[in-house]
Length: 173
Image (cartoon, rainbow, N blue to C red; front, side):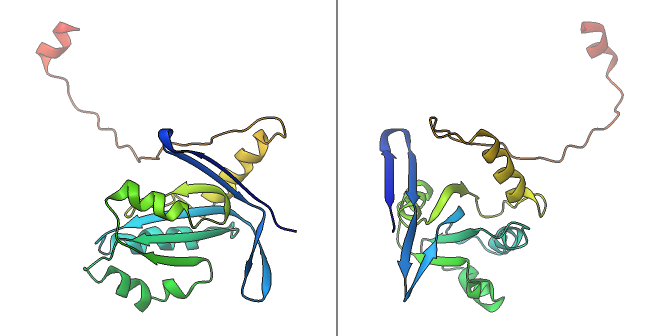
């Protein structure tokens, strides 16, 4: 038994696609918890760190969709060379697009996860437990009678310096 529910709100840019399961090859494959979309066009080496940070997660219930707009900088060849495209959870979709948001929308049509996570090239998951922590937070709020959109902020390492204040600035305070 398989089911497919789609909720598309194009005007707001929000898609929610819920696939119960799908047929692939000769067998039945269960839905992934996360579909992680990485959109790229000539990202250089940045895409390597992004993909490796996902593959190193403790939670393995995800798929990675790399949506590439036909990069010409050998970044896809570098992913192949390092064996990252051979991972069972990684899918490469190469298709012409009209910018990052069009690329994201193209990738959304391919998701198999319950939740969608966008991660830009060059960005990475802070530590090995990010997906596990996100899943735990989501499950705290799951309810049969409500729908939620979960979003987050980025983590930036901040550096603070104890610098002397100019005297005229202190006087103005």
